[in-house]
Figure 1 (cartoon, helix red, strand yellow):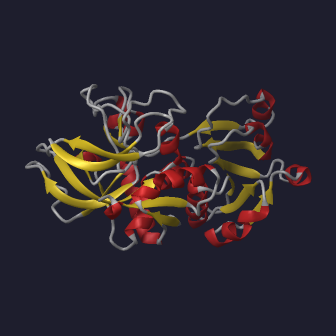
Figure 2 (cartoon, rainbow, N blue to C red):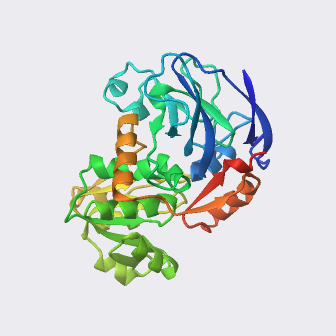
Figure 3 (tube, rainbow, N blue to C red):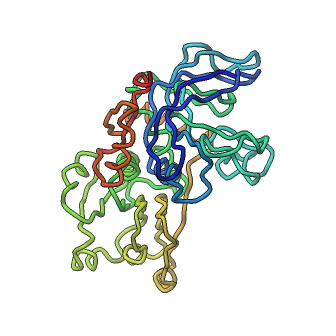
Length: 348
């Protein structure tokens, strides 16, 4: 075992603080990574504060990881010391169920191993995430990162990027489609960038005008205010797709009528409370309300390569590790454009 530095929450009501963590020595198929940057995801906050239940303390969050390979096991063939690599939302899966064999490890039928607050496939070893100096990950779940893009801006692609890329690809969003994005935060700003790069006509739906200029600069073609009843009436039966990125409590019924017949509303944000859906909003237009998780490893690599080719990164605000608790509060207040990224060199 190797003792490393990290930041952890000891309970739901305690701020994150320095914590010494033991990492395993690299096994034959392992890659050891020195973490350079780690994004701050809204799910880090939900989990650290046990808002979804099931948090195992102490918890070291972080699943948007970019770093440099420092050691490799003897059976590793895809990476060598010095390579720039990434780690996303999960670090292992059973490997033999239907979904794993279909490159959909995120839907592993036996439970994938998330990067933090989860169990490895031995079902007893707890995982700890990227708010740390190093991480050790099985080679199959390590991703290649292009040096064409600024690495700190690449880190959030490992969650926010793939969370929005995966449904866009699955539902074949393409040129000519009309797509709305609900919420212009960490997920929403990536949905705008990716959907517009694929040729869709993108509309941002927001509660206020404060982000209209940003929406346009990110690639949105239109910006509409959802608190205006006349606007919402005008937008009825207008969109082929809606991507709902909001993690706060809100009403899906406000948006379903905006879909055309056969339209699809894709939920990628996770509000803390269950939502009630009026059946007629679905039945009346043969509309679909669906959800999507992150992509599998193969699709995540495809997304990273696509972003490198098209020059797409996240808009980030850099912080030091000792600012992470403040960053949590600012994230909850919507005061970030659009993802906090921790410079892990500040972990001393």
